[in-house]
Structure formats: C-alpha cells, structure tokens
Image (cartoon, rainbow, N blue to C red; front, side):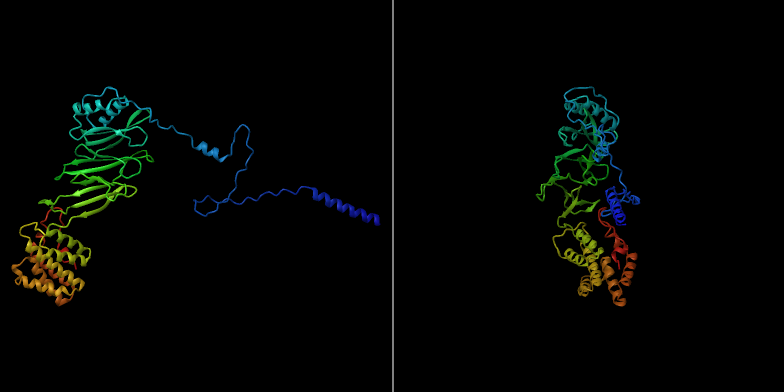
Length: 441
C-alpha cells in the first residue's frame, strides 16, 4: 500500500512538471471597436486597429515605412529655371504697326523679349512707331522684383483700348511671360519708387496715373510686390489712393519702414466749397499699406469750424461742439468763405449753442439767449436763426420738453426755407442739411 501511495505522489508530481514546461496558450487580442474618424480636436484620443507590420522584403516591395509613403506622395516638381534667359541684345522681328488692343501689345512684347530683343530697340519702337510712351512712359530692366536673380522688365505705356498701363514681364524657363498688368485708367503710369519700402527683403513698385475723366484731375496710385506663396504680383493697397497731389515716400517715424505721404493742399473752390488742408499718411500694418493718420491744418474759414462743430453735435459730443461754436464766434483770424456770411454764421452758432446748453442743462443757456436778444432785438429783421432761437426758447419754457420745442422750430423752417438754403450753399464737398439736422431733438 505504501508503495502504491508513493507511486501516486510521483505520478502527480510528474504531471505538474510536464504542465509547467508546456507553453502557455496564446491569447488573441480583443479588437476594440474603431470609432468613426472624428475631426481632429486637441486632446482627443483616437483608437483603432493598426495594420500588421511585416518584415521588409529584400527587394523593397510593399514597404510599410511612413517616410516612403510621404516621399511617394510628394514627387518632385520641375523647378523653374530663371538662369537660362535670353540675353536681350538682339533685334528679332517686332511689328511696326501699332497693335489694336492692350492684349495684342503685351503678346507682341512678350514674343520680342523671348526672342532676345534689346530694351533699346523695344523702347525706340514703342516711342517712334507705336507712339505709346508719350512724355511719362518708359522701360526699366534694372530691378529684380521677384528675388530670383534676374531683373524683370517693367514697361509703362498707353494702350488703344484701356488707357495707360503698367506691365511687368518676367523670364521663366528661357522665355518671357506677362506677370502683371495694371490699367488704373487715365494717363500713362509713372513709376514713383522701386525699392524695399516695407523692409521685408523684396522691392515694391509704386506707380501713379493721372485721371482727368471727371471734373477734377486726380492721381490714382498703386503699389505692387511679388508674392512667392501665391506665385504672382499682388497689390499692397486695399484700393488705389486717389489724391490731387502725387504721394511721396518718407520714413516719418524712423522705423526703417517707409510711409506714403499725401499732401492735402487744395483749399477748395466754388464747386467744392472750402476744404481742409493737411497731410494723410499710409503706413505698413504687416499685410498691406493702409491709411494711418490724417493731420489737418488749423481751419482757415469760419464755416469750417461750424461744420466741425455740427459733426460733433450730431455725434452727441456736446462738450466738443460747445467749444468749437465758441471758437467760431470768438476767433477774429477766421476768414469768411462768402461775403455775406458773417452775421448769418454768428446767429446760427448762437442758436446751436442754445440747443447744446439746453440738452446738457448748462447754466450758460440763459446768458446765451440774453446775448441773442441784446444783439438782435427784432427777430423778424434778423437772420432766420434768431427767430428759431426765440421760438425754441419760448416753447421750452412752456413745455420743458426738447422735442416739443424742436417741433415749433421745424415749423419756422418750413415757413422760412432760407434756414436751409443759407447752409446748403457751400459746395459739393460740404454737408447737406435737413430740417431734422437743425433741431434733432
């Protein structure tokens, strides 16, 4: 019995040893359900099955290397050859008869340059045969506008169908092509500056064209530069600068970035009315040149102060309006725009002060009305604004309501329309008044 028991123990022990020596059964991974691929969001965890990586075959087929996939997806593209360009010292055929359209002109010039035609021959043809350069047109081939090492050819000329034009030709892969054509209208464009104005490493091309199609002659100024990201020339102004003088270039604030300076030196005429003089600066904001600041000279004419005060009044800046009305009344250096206006404008500004003092509950209200009564005791024989002041005052005393007082004033305006015509005779650039403007409460 003892022998049988010992054999049983030995048998169990052997089975345990054999079981321990066997390999553990393989556990198959449980695939987690792959969710629908979401839009990439920072912090979002993505789960899903990855393909099984196989050993790389020796022949290089069926590669699973991500770098290989990227390389295959980004096959090289031909790089433009900017060095293999015509020498521009020949004399290939160029039509002697002027082309009939701007498009035909650019096609002919492109073919001429691609054939190695010299700029001297091109300029002579444009000037003497095509009669396209005039006094302000010309050709430049000394500025590399794209930074590729080969200067572009810039031509400004008159076209038969689109007015003045400025075109830029560039050489790519041994041929010239039209890279830019600006037709601002009007006369032949004049190149004002070709250089790095905004300190970004590439030159800008600043040009202007005079347009006299309207009553006044205006200069339309544009600025273009090469954008490598877009592969074309772009305008660095949101729109052409329209001015009566040619803009100048100056680094006003000494930051190595040039500003465009437009002088406002037109005092106005009978058609426009009085105009404020001064200076407008256009500055670089990192993307484009935009209007930065306009510095106006002190007003020269009394009506200009009146207009500025009325703008402040309409914006409910009553403290500013009150100060301007008093300045217009007191400054003896202000000039009249019209010979008959001094008493008219003085009574109007007194009337407007009355409104402003009433709205702000200023104690000067009574003093202002007393001044009107003292200077003009007979309202019917005074400018209309004296009667408007009296009617406003009386209605305000009865109703203590600004709206009711203005209703009475507007009835005076309806009966005496000179209240508007006396103000609306200052030219096309001056504000146009309505009855509601004169008493807005």
